Image (tube, rainbow, N blue to C red):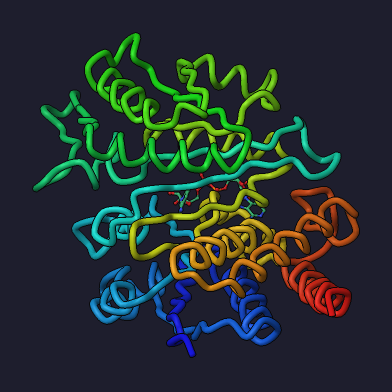
Amino acid sequence: MTDALNCLMLPGDGIGPEIIESAETVLQSLISIYELPVQISHGVIGLKALAQTGTTMPPDVEQCMRAADMIVLGPLDTMAYVPDEGGINVSAFCRTELGMFANLRPCVSLNSSALKSMDLLIVREASEGFYADRNMYRGLGEMQLTEDVAISVRKITRQQSERIARIAFEAARERRSHVTAVHKANNFRITDGLFLEAVRAVATEFPDVILSDQLVDSMAALLVRQPEVFDVILTTNLFGDILSDLASELSGSLGIGGGLLAGTHQCAAQAQHGSALDIAGTGRANPLSILRSLALMLEWISINRGIDQCKHASIVLETAIRTLVVDRLILTPDLGGTASCQEVTSAILSSLSELRETSE
Ligand code: NAD
């Protein structure tokens, strides 16, 4: 009997509590249908934790995060966080302190609400790059020299570039065997030059995978013009963040963009979108992005912990999501429907039960 794995639910801000409730209900259902060796625990982070404890990531939650096998991480209203006043970015903590350096963001068009047809995977380096809170040993990679002059520093390392490249090439082997490295080496000759050099070195270990490269600005245009030609897009932190929102929205909605943060020992299901304050509390939040992230998390656990039931649960969940979107029956307003977050969750639960019955 496998020891139960711990899955920590962290709702976060804005629409976070609504979509994480959906994720927990669906995970509970999968645990009971497929007898997954997974135990759910809870933590409070974000602005609610700040009001209660003075920090967005209280020390007891930090301990739980370190001990968890997997985390379901809600979006954070990081724009409202003040670093000197308890505003710790929990997502950045996962990427740096917990070692979840890889951010996998699949973008797949499923129905006619998609502006473009695509089936691609963005592999984004998540632990360094232009993000001021994760690119310095001490202090922040952003500073103000005078009242009118501010600068940012970007960190690119050979080690992390090679590490993320391996993830991309391995993923491509399971897909259509093509990696496109996205960069801006015509201007950032040293940093993006180093990134490209590392990617090309790793490519020699994967002779069965084709490598091409593209400047990030033309990549944005090509994503709009012909996204169907891309398979795996490998890029640095900021470029990956921007391109994945573009690709998700073109594939239907940011509300269906699932994501996984992965390290060597732990992973976190984290949707591509933010806290969507404009629709928080209205019931309009689409839970499919976090549910697709949940499917990615279960797949990662099945591979990394050798638990076959998790693979099965992951496939069935993704099938239920795709069926719901393709049939266009019960969808939230971002996908052209009128259903609420709870109604979509109920539809997914019914679909999971039906899929179980048909497989019996
Ligand atoms: P956002 O992703 O929250 O929202 C952009 C647009 O997409 C909004 O119109 C929103 O309503 C819509 N949208 C997003 N998720 C949706 C969903 N599940 N269903 C339906 N519609 C959805 O981006 P923003 O408004 O620029 O940022 C809001 C806050 O989130 C900011 O504080 C930002 O810093 C933060 N943020 C956090 C994360 C994260 O925690 N991973 C990521 C991005 C932004």
